[in-house]
Amino acid sequence: MSTLYEPLTFLRGPTMKNRFMLAPLTNSQSHENGKLSEEEFHWLTMRAEGGFGLTMTCAAHVQAVGKGFPGQLGIFSDDHLPGLTRLADKINSEDSVSIVQLHHAGMRSPESVIGTHPVSASADEQTGARALSGDEVKTLISDFIAAAVRAEAAGFHGVELHGAHGYVICQFLSEETNHREDEYGGCAENRWRLLFEIIDGIRLQCGADFMLGVRLSPERFGMRLPEVVEMAQRLCTQGHIDFLDMSLWDVFKEPEEAAFKGRSLMSYFTELERGQTRLGVAGKIRNPDEAEAVLAAGVDWIMLGRAAILHHDFPERYRHQSDFVPTQLPVSRAYLASEGLSDRFIDYMSGWPGFVAQAESEQPTP
Image 1 (cartoon, one colour):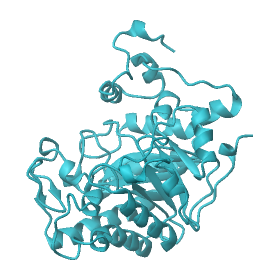
Image 2 (tube, helix red, strand yellow; image 1 turned 135 degrees about the vertical axis):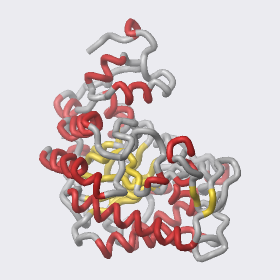
Image 3 (cartoon, one colour; image 1 turned 45 degrees about the horizontal axis):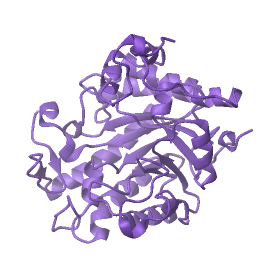
Image 4 (spheres, helix red, strand yellow; image 1 turned 180 degrees about the vertical axis):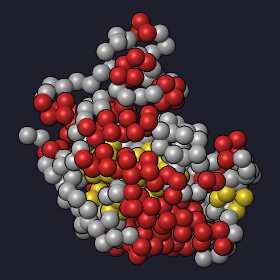
């Protein structure tokens, strides 16, 4: 049996039955008020039923002004609790660890979606974002913590903080977008402060067995590899988080920064002293051979995105078919519908070059 099917324990929370996590995927399927839709419930629970050891929601926004895309799942109001509770109950019943990804788009919140100017660590002329006041920063921290408390009340095993891809936490982390002159700007220690205060608050207000993870991306959006490595090391050794999720775009690529080429980007994180913090990666893991290679490189778990869209039961297929070969792109709309995607999700995926066949004749239906 592949090591991908060995259980994985965490400092807190339940044991993961295998090393497959469902990536938090934008899908635009929920209601505009943030309430869970039947379509999003179906999409996520199919993956739990398909054998994923951990099922993570799409990015769920913690403030209405932090909404990043139409149809985004919300967790900023108790009005969201009934749908979230139903979702957690179903994921848990499938022996899958249930996680909500907590998100705020910051300057990446389109004004057309939120109905006002977006906010960020600092003002941004290109997006029209205004800088958060000192009091608003404290409120932002409190709202992330409140969302975690809400997730726990709904029955989820834990949450992941979305600190990657240029969203609001990342906007504070990056000196390219953070020009503040208070305790949340300037040196790296200050720019990291928001993230670490959110972590401390969740640990204080949530249960002792509540899981907490952090997603980081080490490149783009003003992030620099040496600083991200240093921050990741602190997150791992501090002992306040249970897993670190490194979004690498491509797990096999070399760093973009010339000084750090010659080895894989992933290797800078597998060599960290991790203590009891579990490390996983995401980025173009498309088939079983690639999944095996990544696990052999020293991570604790892998995260599947597009591969999980194509096969809701990827873990179970590979478990029972050692020669399992995933469906090749492009695929038809009918095929994606059979894998639990709604019309809105399929429309969204049509924006990904080469993913959805332009004519049904290009791909057999299932």
